[in-house]
Length: 247
Image: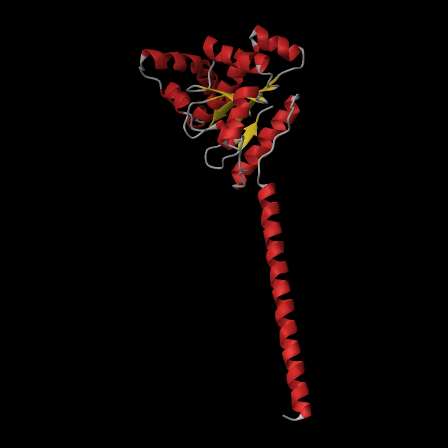
């Protein structure tokens, strides 16, 4: 082999070797970069909650932010592990909000507010109405567990409200629910411009009526006067998934 050809062969081999080494390095670097990015994204989608929440404003913001995530489909991953469950069992629960809402299967508060185990104290019944039992549960959540925010969460197309608007005979125990909602329906009928508007107006009135009932509690009244608790209303929109707060 001629001297020039031999030199050319050596240079070609060197270039190829360098390309392989640096190419491999770039691939590894790219792979590492992607892995880091994935790790960062995983951390960004992991649910974390402030250890201490003492104000209604903080609590409401957590619910609003959580609902926005729910609406946008950006739900955070939750710690549902055995360790977390044991931790809650040993240390007890510290919910930052008390939510009284309807039993409707389309309105699960933990999901629509994107919250985790131990975050919200939920009381549910058809029509989100209150009686001594539900009111006692609300008082327990606010006074004993220390939740600074009480949310009365109604929703669109509530079956209990519709049954009350439609009227007619109902079984005894369902009648107890209907009788609670009737004042709201009557008020809605007197203010509605169209018959079709009555159910949703009645739903809004029912939220306000439940708030008024809760505020009659001497326990809640004392907590409000001490500025330890705030009672607000909210409405869930079935199709959009959005919760609008009335206060």
